[in-house]
Image 1 (tube, rainbow, N blue to C red):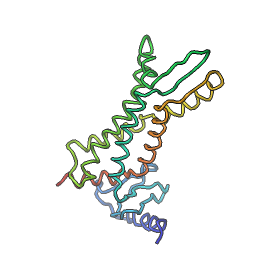
Image 2 (image 1 turned 120 degrees about the vertical axis):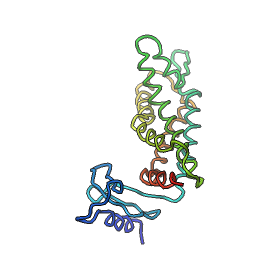
Image 3 (image 1 turned 90 degrees about the vertical axis):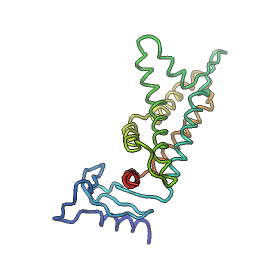
Image 4 (image 1 turned 120 degrees about the horizontal axis):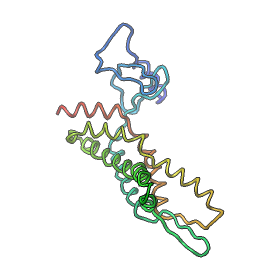
Length: 226
């Protein structure tokens, strides 16, 4: 039986029967249209979709937490490399200038733009790095089959709230647009930090495909009772 057939069957069984009102704590709201469902136990490899908008509600995978921890650890290493290694080398009129991500942040640190420096540093460095570390803290013990770490629930909730503000992807797109405009004015060389940042963005996208937030919340709830 194909995955698509499993998906359809799971979606139909996910709907709450008419006239039946389960406890509120047993209901799951669709993140897109807010439709409420009482989900059954979804087997690994299957998906439960919203009947109204077809958003995936849960998609548990075997070994997903281990993969997420490994990818988050790789992202931390790439972020540290992107911070301290040269990001870009610009040569014009015989003058060469190298810059790193820290240089981008510090260039606004003086004068009236200190707020901009704080925002840039937080959105492209601090928040993404903090979110990776938070995911490792929450998921690593459960990936080994242990009970969750202390305060794992609020830490994971904080990691989820930080996600919209982690703008590493937006930064790399902005850099790409700027490089196209500057390419005709000077000779540009991309440093190792640039490629580390590109790899970071790609790994983050892959990591998000493995993350089933509903499964993580259920695992946290179940193992917190151990």
